[in-house]
Amino acid sequence: MKRSWFASLALYAAAAALTIFTLAPLVWLVLMSVSSPTDLTAVPLNWWPEQVDLSRYGTLLNLENGSGTRFLSALRNSILTAGGATVIALVVAIPAAYAFSRRDAALILLFGFLATIMMPPITYILPLYEIFGSLGALNKTVTLIVVYCAMLLPFATWLMKTNIDVLPVEVEQAAFMEGASTAFTLRRIVLPLALPAIAATCMLSFLVAWDEFFYALIFTSDLQAKTLPVAIADFSAGRVTDYGVIASVGVLATLPPAILAICFQRFIVSGLAAGSVKG
Amino acid sequence: MSALTRTKEKWVLLAPAIIVLSLISLAPFLQTVWASFTDAEITALERNSTWIGFENYAYALTDPDFIAALGRTIYFTVVSVGLEGVLGIAVALLLNQKLRGRLFLRVIIILPWAVPTIVNAVAWRLIYHPDYGALNSLLLQLGLIDEYTSWLGDPDWALNMVILADVWKNFPLVAYIALAALQTIPSDLLKAASIEGAGAWKRFRSITLPWIIGPMMVVLILRTIEAFRVFDIIYVMTRGGPADGTKTASFYVYQEYFSYLRSGSGASYAVLVAGISAVLILAYYAGMRRSSQGV
Image (cartoon, rainbow over all chains, first blue to last red; front, side):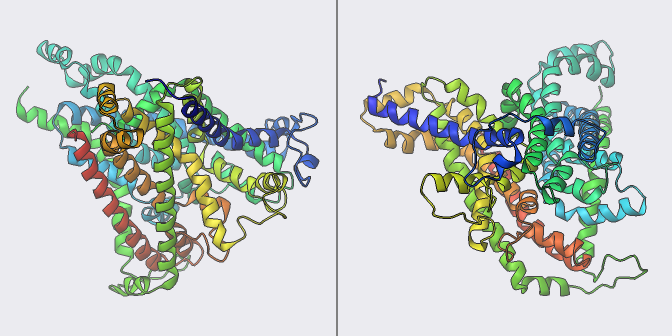
């Protein structure tokens, strides 16, 4: 179908508007992070910095000052928490997914799993807080890992199940004929075939854990365990007079997920779509 | 393999997941339900809480502040998810056209989705800043306002400004799902309709929309479930203020717990919020079943 010039014009105008709407807040965040404090407090603003000032990044990435220590320990905690939770969640999710896919576990149970993460965290928070408190487990990375594992597990199980569903079942049957155990078949036959799905599930799980704020806010209290989202909320609520610092922290925390998202877009989009389109 | 071994194996495979979820989700949930019938408080002192039946619920359901918080949560949810739906479908239709730079657009709209929720909240808070914010500066320079406005300082405006920030982050997900659904429409169908003389709007109404409505409903219900428990963005942008103008249900429960230390009463609010979520979750389940049966 050929478009009229008017329709084309409208389409390109819409595309331009979409580009601006999508990118403007991000571009501005980056600009803020490299503008001088005087540019940022001008009325009206100096949109384009006269000099690119990278000193804030230098400060944040240096352990020898307060902001740097706060940022870098939060970064470490976030990597450990999100990474640890992702690995454990996958180790638990894959056998469960196999049971749903190949051992006729009732799907209503899988839906029950999913219902646990759809409930507001506010319904779990206080009993968990009290139990962890009495165990002396508050403000510990390992505690967050356990909680995040429960948070990632249902979605990871579902994603792995939809992916194992489409693997050819004949190879597994042949292995069983030869007398292989389920554990062996799972490890040596299913896992290698499902590797792309495992990578996609890991990535999505990691991003979800990287983003989590509420549990981290309640369960952590200092540098030892605070994750990036909590540290960023602190930076933003504190008496920071230079907004560029807050912007720099935001840029740094966005880089890992943004890079993953751009590089593995296909993976991510099909993973997200699996949650809504497929059954 | 015998049927018995298969069944036994099934439960062995499921056991770790069931144990984790029972301990971290199910048990705390049941405990919250239990606490909602008591007058428990968070205190360092030894204090035995007593069973008070439905007293907390009787109070909660007549508490005008809680009802108002629920009302704001519903407003937030309906407006954000509604806008995300409309914007998401519009963007998907655009990205489904033959367009120079289409690939570029498809790549960049994943960026808002990738921005962590807290960074999104912080960034928009800076953009809305009453004295040095980009929004004020932009509108002033365009001549649309005469003086700087405190966007988050006005109880009537604040929630809408939070909604805008939320929509910016979440429309990409809806757009991607809509696009995936659009790409399954056989192009012959639209061509045939076009030859029959159906205009663009007619084609959208009678072919495109019915075709994508199943997956759209599923993703929008999912977004509704998420939006209904909104907390993070509120915590960073406004802390429920000004004048409670952005205090949503989750934030209300959070304060009841951690500011007023009333765990029994807080639990009853939490259970009420969970009840509404449960209805939404069942709607999601029904939607999933319908769309997986291939409408």
